[in-house]
Image (cartoon, rainbow, N blue to C red; front, side, top):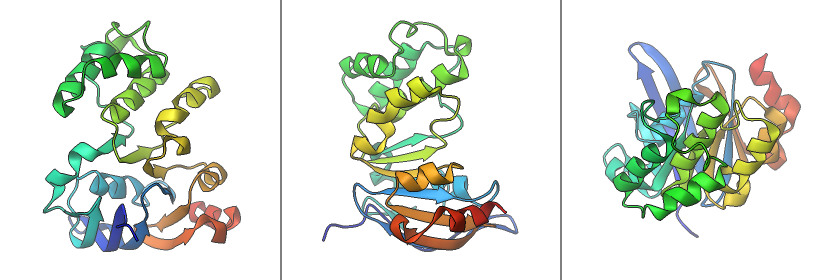
Length: 227
């Protein structure tokens, strides 16, 4: 059997005295999608940031793409794509300039930038400063940035926020299940999240409520997290 893309054993994270995550354990195989469900403040974004190597776990074991975190974070960073609430784009630069900057960081040919701009429907506005773009356009550019280097693992925090149906459909080949990548998807759309995931992690107050294959979980059980 192949090594899990993600393996967590009793992962914990604190902010001072406050426990943000505790006792999170699961395994995600390569190519699978994990939906992370829970109310605001449940620890979802904290988990995503640990997987992205942006936060250090304070307890337990976290392995991502075969690397143990945080000691081997350097082995992971170039293989992960992160799409969160912040588009991680320089506002004074254009979309094209932003993607070219990220291409140089990852050693990606500049021709890939033009492919990504076309893929997200931003070729015509590619030279506009980011500060002039709508929230939906920013999200499309952020998706292009997150997938520019063909990452093995995608970490997605409400990736379809601010997108109209046509834009969301446009991004599916890059960030959807059809991309073929391992994905961790934070969403408040319980039915939609379960429908496109293989596994579901439920968090309540930073603690694991369940970690189950989606076939063994119904939407009513998941919605209890938000009660």
